[in-house]
Length: 295
Image 1 (cartoon, rainbow, N blue to C red):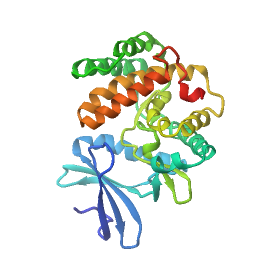
Image 2 (tube, one colour):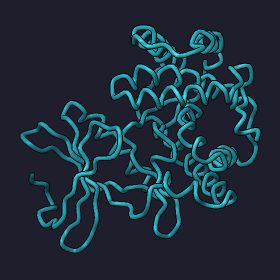
Image 3 (tube, rainbow, N blue to C red):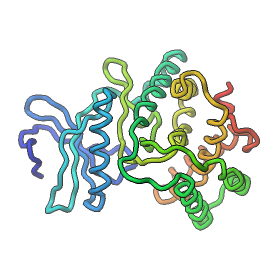
Image 4 (spheres, rainbow, N blue to C red):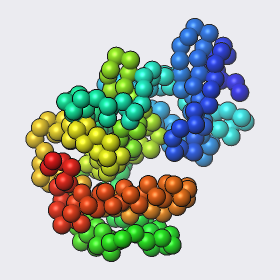
């Protein structure tokens, strides 16, 4: 493997964590500088280039993220690679739940402020109206679920809730989305600061849809999750937010079942447990403000 500017790295180790199909490696050069190397199939060239350019813009905002260093192709143009700076620290998922409740909330509040800045990026090319995009996503989600061969309890209630409330998603604004914003994609640095990683699922869409992965956060730290919402809205959370989020959470609940079936039985079991947690948090979708937020 030959990468311009990086002929003198002394360490290269594969990173096996995560759900991405990309190959990831930790690299360290002769000077001790640390980097992340990500390899993707060449079919993702345009997507990965857009991600790389977006990271440049986010870096200019002073956010604590992996800064983009180099982008190109390898293996006779069969692979696309990107090199980013490495963020030293520990997985937030392992650390945050062990902290004091006030510290968990504080870090979550900061995560909300960071998300504000991430979403300040606007599309650089024409984007179709959100109601069309989300309409297609909802249709495909329900089709995939109905055809996956596995059913969860109360699925008809959940699907009816999505379809009967879909109209509220019309005319939503469109911004840059991280795409997988939760504790599992955050690092607590050696200075106890919060850093955000793994932007490979980025897209452009409703900024409030970004909270549809919050189950992966609040099941580990309710205080962090509350703080993230409060920080994002500067302690003035509109009631409309919870109405919109309940629809996205319902869709994500249904989407998680066929997704998990493509991985393993363990992933399916986790999806089933999470689905019940979300369903119960909304009192069977009779309430749109989740119990964990109300306390």
